[in-house]
Amino acid sequence: MQHTIPCLKECLCEMRSFVATQLSQTQLSETEKAQIVLAIDEACSNAIIHGNNCDKNRLLQLTIDFYQEEIRIEISDIGKQLPTTPKNTDFDIQQNITNKMKGGLGLRLIHNIMDNVDYYHRGNIGVCSLTKRLK
Amino acid sequence: MFSIIQNMNQLLVEQIVLPPNCLKLIVKGDLDAGTAIEMDDIIKQALDNKYFIILLNCTDLKYISSAGLGVFISYLEDIKTEGGSFVFYNMLPSVYNVFELLGLHRLLTIVENETAALLAI
Image 1: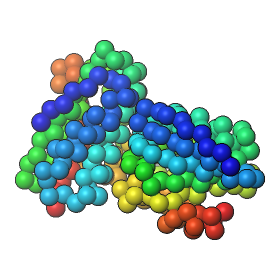
Image 2 (image 1 turned 90 degrees about the horizontal axis):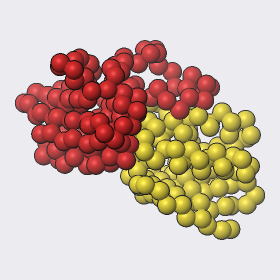
Image 3 (image 1 turned 180 degrees about the vertical axis):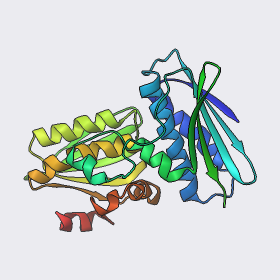
Image 4 (image 1 turned 90 degrees about the vertical axis):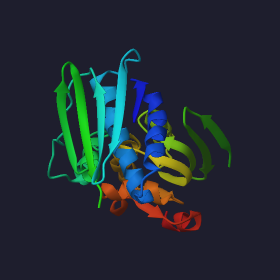
């Protein structure tokens, strides 16, 4: 299933609604569904804000594919490639508090929730790939 | 005691002053990358006005992302320096889980209801 939105923060709610509808057809727990919605929202937010500077003329395409053993999500755009690994792999939230940091938590959430996070190019399209294995 | 309604994109925040220095925020809707800046403005204004104890009624907070959490994290040191705190209550399990994913449930005051929140300040 695919859904496309312009690169606007105001469209994140619409994207979350689409994802929640798709996940409602699965046997995942409510917590797992909410976490996957969160991870996708974080990836889309990063792409919209940092990859595309909230350019409403650019598009963000989300694809969700359901398999027996996993859910694969692709977020595609023509924006600049973003890091997929958190800078501080030994994460300590206290550092964010001490340094009064507003950002830097989204990638950590994505990694905490998803089983695989990758970024690659398909021609001139950048693809952020997220995978959640099903138990 | 007075009340101000601030209408935002997907977020509605009602502010109620509890003298002498406490502000209660009734947060409704989604606190995401699109609405975090409005919450940031509210918290900044609260601190500028010397409200260092901020109660957050989260009954109708349906969603929070890292952008929303980042607002509270970025002001936590300032608010603690002034002897204050954020006190969250009536939080939905799905919202509480986002705090848990980052370990914030151990660092912030999150209680069951308003009675417990008032006892925590």
